[in-house]
Length: 392
Ligand SMILES: [Zn+2]
Image 1 (tube, protein in one colour):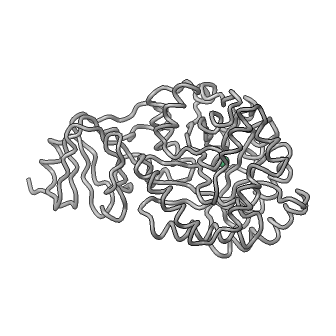
Image 2: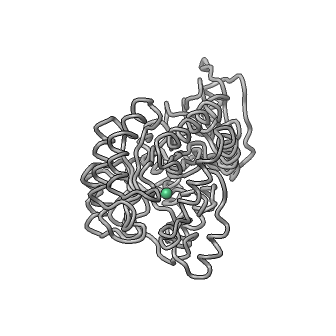
Image 3: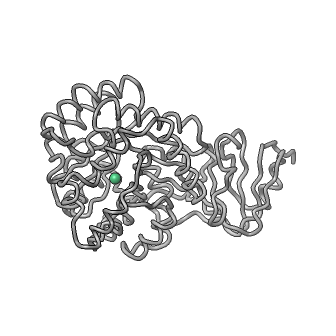
């Protein structure tokens, strides 16, 4: 048999976890003693080492020496570009002051907004670059990044341009999200601010092509469900896809807005009703759960992952990395998902790969080792720094 030429052959894994199995099946599509053939950065075939060696010859062969191969992890929810830390806030939380109380008093998000507004684009880029390096080292090859620490047009654009620069520079795949509606700036009412987002910021962001998604913090005391719907409807009309921080602290109608507008994902869902969660099986909204966020808030409250899985929902997991939740690794999230959400290993692996890709609308491009997908691979528990579209 004439062997077909590929660029790279990755061989001799103990297990290759392809996740290339039918939808709604919990199987991981494991190939024993397998590997992956790659050409022009795309997966040609994930199969047994024997078969790959018979079918292909390659310019470069990587022997993974009995380690495990997985799709690169996808982190569908981060607030990665900001300046400053909020270590004093943790002390307040330990003393029993709630997150929302801190925000109401001008701390929390507002404190980070003040620091980020003062920061130069170059310093924001350097913070982002270092954090993305940590993401990649922890196995994430795709990372969503939200704006939301500017809260006025120039500063939101400054953050989104930083994300754009990171996108061009860094080997991670980066998905940019505009989240001007992250908090109400001091001195403004939420209705005034919503109007400035809808009439000024969103058109500018969409015109500049700086975001793929729009997100809103739908929560009591921040943006209510009517305001959230107004912002997201406008974003949808401008061609952005939709996400929502829904029902994190209270059941405030966030999941309902997600269902109504067919958002790509609804995130947090700690207090969402079973009715709205059940509705997601019909509307195609992907639930994104963020157990490290609940962990950092020290509220002891978690989303009902088991209930969602029983409904057949494709539960995705993300870090929710932010200054109030300094957590960049999806493997740490995996550990928390097991302990606090009672998810099993295959549910967790799906949660940080194919379901997380779905939460970004990228399930046809990444998240499994399916033929034609991007060759973003993770080896053992260590991200391959070669696992980028640039190298392969
Ligand atoms: Zn968030």
